Image (cartoon, rainbow, N blue to C red; front, side, top):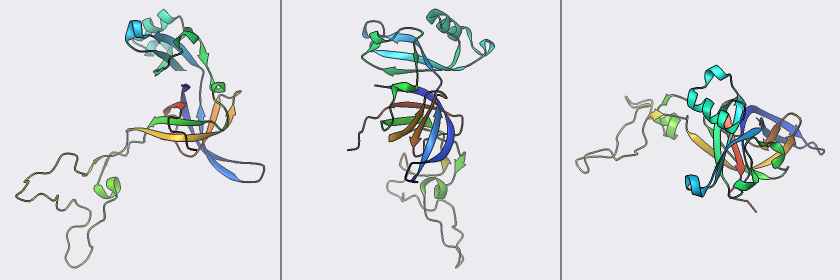
Length: 210
């Protein structure tokens, strides 16, 4: 399992030799530093914990400082971990860079979608609006919930107005179009979740399209 933590820069488009345009998302991946190794004997599972993103010492609390001091690495902003059976192949302080992936390889990208605040059912669930004429006063409201004397309640998880966005989203099976090892950039085909400068996680895809 290959795994990296990066930052979404934005979207652009690139052209191949035949002039075909490809929309791509640009991800900046600073070197991920190994700060902890977890094994079945000590933690119950095998995993590698990595850190990325520069941060000033005054912005860290004492537990995090001690965690980095114990590993003997510089202070970082983000901590993340991924499961792997090759724990012994990693050492504390090792840097994992963009060159672990290859062009044309497929990956899954995980991020937090943009928060859109409280939204109604038309925007949130694509409901149809009510009629505008003939005295109707039902335009963008909920209307009937389908509960009369029986069952006499609104069922749990009924689609209604509420918070929209700001959720963990995984976009699967994206193709890597280009890798820039000098600038630590990965360009993947298509859109990825989250705003610009948002943290994203890139890992080997679990569903390979034939």
